[in-house]
Length: 260
Image (cartoon, rainbow, N blue to C red; front, side, top):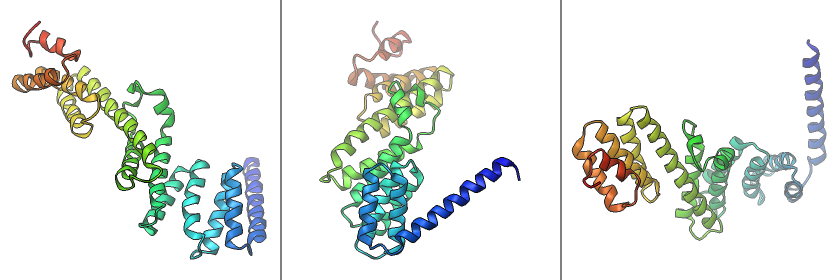
C-alpha cells in the first residue's frame, strides 16, 4: 500500500470510530433533544453536525412529532453545508410526503434558493450576460420554476415577495441570455437559429425588455434569408411598440422599413 493510501485509511478509520462514539452517546436521546441540539448546531454554523443529528432523529423517531420538522430542517442544513443535490432531494421528499403541509411553501422556496445559488458566481458577474452564453442554465430555470410555484400556489406565504423578486430577476437574466445567444447566431450567419431563438424570447419572456431586441434581430434575420414580407411585418411591430429601438435605423438602412 502506498503511503498516501495508508494515511487516508487511518483518517477514514478514525472518522468511523468517532461516528461510532457519537452514535453511542446520542443513542438514547429523546427526539426533542436531537432537534434542539441540531438547531443549536445550525445557529453555531456547524451544519454537518446538524445534518448528522437530524438524520439520526429521523431514523430513531420516523413517526414522531419532530420527524416532519426534521425532514425540512435537514434540507436547509444540507444547503448551508454546500450539499446542493442532497438539499434538493430532501425538499422533494418533503413535498412528496407532506403535500398539504404549510411548510411546503418553504420547501419550494428553498429549492429555488439552492438552484439559484448554484450559479451565483455566474449571476454576480453576468448582468451583461454574455458570460452565460453556452453555459448550462438548467439550474437557473429550475430555480425560476420553484420561485414561480411559491408565487402562484402560496401567494400569501412569507416567502412570496422575495420569490417574486427573484423570479423577475431570473426571467430578465434568462431572456437576455437568449438574446446574447441569438446575436451570436446572427453574427455567424445562422439566421434560422437566430429567428427561432428570438421567437422563444417573445413566447417565454413577453414582459421583458429583451422582446425589443428579439423583434429587431428577428427582422434582420428574415431580411438576410430573403423573407421580405416577414422581415417587414416584424419591423413594423418593432416600430409600433419600441419606436426608439436602435434596430430601426439598421432596418431602414437595409430598406426593410421606409424613411431615413
